[in-house]
Length: 384
Image 1 (cartoon, rainbow, N blue to C red):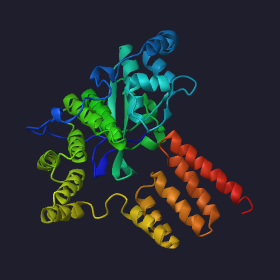
Image 2: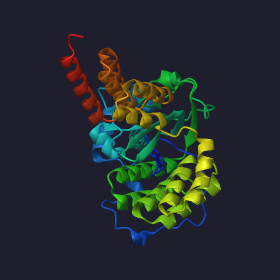
Image 3: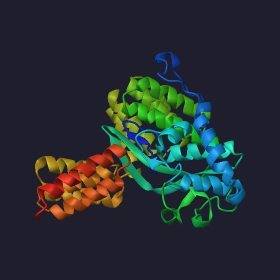
Image 4: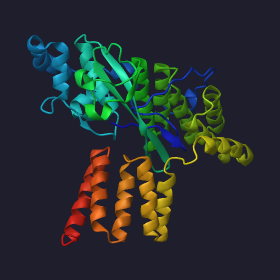
């Protein structure tokens, strides 16, 4: 359901977000500066259909054509929990075959798997970027802005810019129709969806400090769709993490030449300028960024953590609540608010926030961690 765009030290658009962009001219790659990728990176494999998928279609879906028709047969198969419905897990963006095998993935994995199965059956699909409220997550010093994509079996004539009448369309999505109704959607090209997959993999590689792999994934994203602006941002982040500061600066400035208000590129450029000891120039860009983004991602969250460290737990509560009002979907905000409530002895509120943290978690691992903490609180404070 969520995906990521790395911001601040890194700034990429991952799993499920997209942006309109013009191709940036004279982009420089640096293939000789990076070790070969640790795995094969092949666009043809992103939506490749495995033998297991072939067998499933032949034995389970095609026999339903007579009663349901091909679109409904596939829609029911993917939508039914008893068949091939995926469990949501944003820890790794899987390709179509991997998602089918694991029965797990994020929203982009679900889109890729659905598209691969539909194309194997000769069905038409429409990819969609869903415009939701801005949401963020982070890993260490890497910030991610999350987005959302889904897929429609067949074409939704006349509904290219809104998600009206979802209940009557064959939309494959982790989110229920009620949450999507009324949201704007933007059609995506398949080359952009493939670029998003590679961009996600680049982001995920960076979080594991696999900078060489991140470079090749970012490069593959740009080869898939040279108009996908987020992938240029990713490439700039890779250069920055690799120590290629001149290249990183060039990339971020070219992005800003194309999109003067790109806050991700601004944030990353400021970090590069500071690292190259050019504080005056960094300050100029900082002023522009503050006009566009007075309260950057995690502004209140970070101050809440600082208040916790000072022992100012009531102040921490207020700050975490402000962060949650801005973005109610980040699990760590709920988790830290729960910790502040525990420090204040407000156990019922702490329990409630842990339940919300668990509900907002985007990976099976974090879901289980919150469940365990909730059980410990219940056991320790069962009398309250």
